[in-house]
Length: 112
Image (cartoon, rainbow, N blue to C red; front, side, top):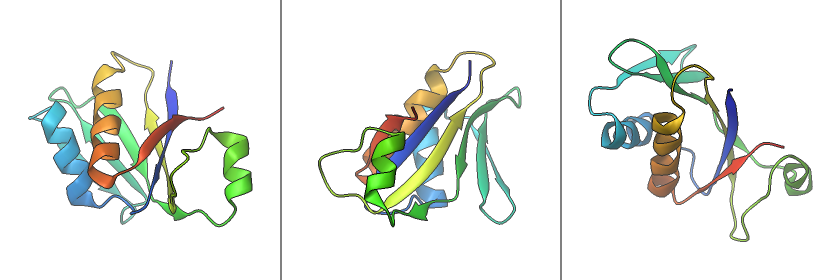
């Protein structure tokens, strides 16, 4: 089953942040960038998508954000959608998302 996650962070993750997080989990991960960063994908060695990370957006309405996810008590400025496909094991994608949160000082939340 696919997982829809959100990264709430004070900085938007860069390509280097994403690739660095991925390589700590899957050293052979391949990186794809679609539509000039609108969608970024990390693939395993068999070309299966581990995680998709969408372009970050500034949070302009914190009250609306709380209706979709449980927000952290600490401040956050950016909302980044993360999708983990439903095929295969979700653990590598979840570990990449967690590593990305550590890199950006953010928090991962599940969409409601």
